[in-house]
Image (cartoon, rainbow, N blue to C red; front, side, top):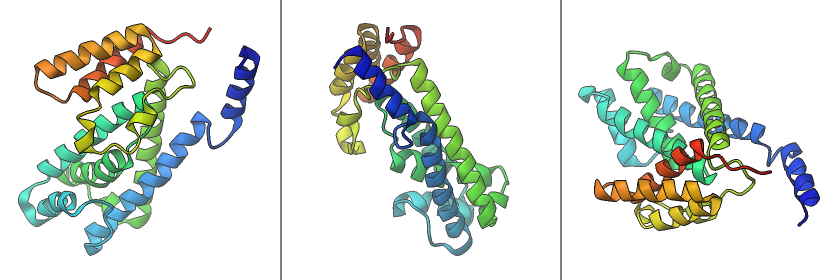
Length: 224
């Protein structure tokens, strides 16, 4: 494919609603609004949460007076990790980021702070979830623009798609390879991050992702 054809294809993608960056926050907002509203249903009627029973049990424990610390920490950490992952691989894990983070983590944080209005009102729950979704969408696009996502390739997206938490531990080397395919500095950063996390006995995939993003910020990909 010639440079002129590549430019034409990129222009087409930017104009197409399904491929354009600006449409991504809209999709995330719609998903987040529905998920947060589902938690509102659970808060009011004990049915409707979009999560596994074990994860919802953390929120239920808080509602029963045991405290919201477990649900807040678990959900918020998943949300943060999946935002970083989504920025690198181009795939946002709906289960980890939105269902767990928006559906359990954020409500637990609000309830822990004594803020109940977004969970008591259906309309307000939709607005709150939508606003959070838009913010997440733009954060992912912004981080991606300044790191490895500055070309049309999604790099590790085909590898990461459909990978669960159990199989994710084996994907560290594949993430390193994907980062190296973006550029040499990003690949080096991914290797360093993976090595450090391995030495600290932490998930290698997380170190590879953080290392690639850090070096990608200092050594951006040039399309010229």
